[in-house]
Length: 171
Image 1: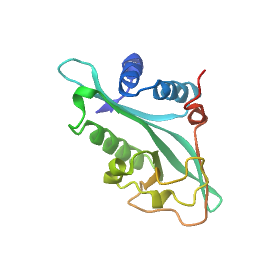
Image 2: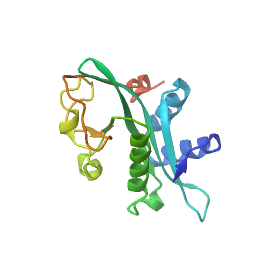
Image 3: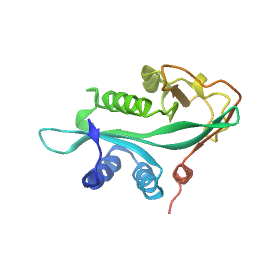
Image 4: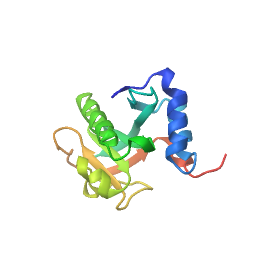
């Protein structure tokens, strides 16, 4: 695992286009970077071929609890090359990202994904309940990053970066 560099841009784009049926995720990553909303991108290298085995991205969110802004991020996307699936690459990327963001002071990480996959990291829909989000529901999950501590108070908005609103739109 390592932080992505400018030299990884083309490989990340190619990986996302191979890993997903549409180009939405590739465009999401491009837009998050252009807009300055990307917080952390990690990659895993295939040491034999030099190609990327996987990547995970975390972007800035605006989240309020008790009327106060808290440091929060969104995990998306997570992509693993077909040859590396079912080998722990995705798990290692997510765990490394969560650890780095928690150490950097982020309070919450949100993900919109399959509960059966993301619950293994501690994500739960219950942590995301009560936040105002267009993605609210069983697939919107959150994870407190400061030792499981969730800030107290009325949950307000949980707003993803503007790039997320473009998902599924044809340009």
